[in-house]
Amino acid sequence: MSVSLEVKERAVRPRSLRNQLRHTGQVPAVVYGFEMESTPVSVDEKELTKVLRDNGVNAVITMNVGGKKINTLMYKAQLDTFTSKIKHVEFLAVNMKEATEVEAEIVLVGESEGVKVGGELTQNLYNVLVSATPDKLPERVEVDITKLAIGDAITVADLPKNKDYDIITDGEEQIVAVTEAKSATEESTEEATEPTVIGEKPE
Figure 1: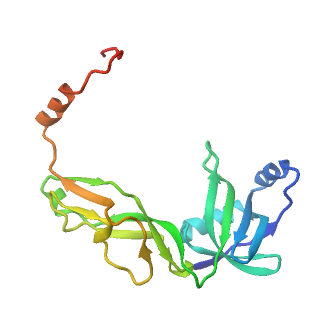
Figure 2: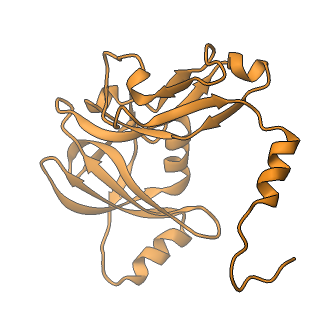
Figure 3: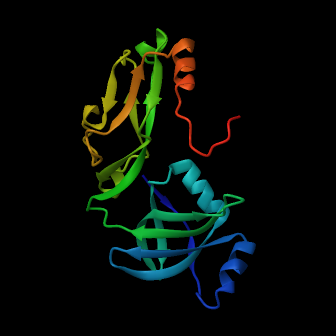
């Protein structure tokens, strides 16, 4: 998937220029990577947010820098602690013919057989590292949990092969498991046997 994004080259001095850009709805950014020297740019915040919302963070973003068409991936984004607005972005220029590695979100699909009969579902892994050419990078990896019974688990190695990408994450990593639900008696017993911490005042 590829989407266009308009960027403008910008000055880096003085540093106060970054804040000036943000006040006008622009996000300071930098582009570097394949056949590309590090180039400071700016991008419209609303347009960038829409591109990411509609296409995902692993989409190929095509931009024109210095009269040259560049294919990029969003490599890093710095968010404001209080507003969660994007403060700065690093775009990585990529070779569309070479594989690159990114993280993809794990999405559980279906309802587990074990959960239907009272089991507890626990997800232990939320992202996997994948490798593919930029145009084949997935935004998410779906994991079918329909047949997961009590006592069963799914690891990375259990995921079906995909012709578009390879999963790099260690195959022994456990993604999700279904266990027997703890009874109220078991939970109260565990609470009663919790060790006392020296120096901690009892409630």
